[in-house]
Length: 105
Image (cartoon, rainbow, N blue to C red; front, side, top):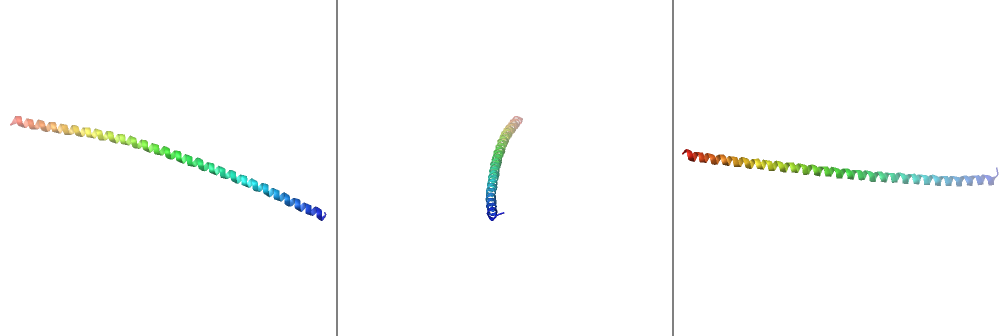
């Protein structure tokens, strides 16, 4: 083999190696970009899911609190009504006792 052919072979090999490295670099860059895009999408999906779950949780807590407040208010109203009926009954008994004492005397 002549020196010219050897040099031509070396230069051709170097050019081919440079082109191959360039292709592999582009493939790595594309793969990295695709990976990063997938990661971004997964992060957006996760964030959205967390937000939706938090909103549903808050709605459930609010509904539970409203329901509990209604129960407490009804219980207070019922207790107040029974308390007033007890006071009225006691007043009536006292009045009847006083009247009875007046009539007995």
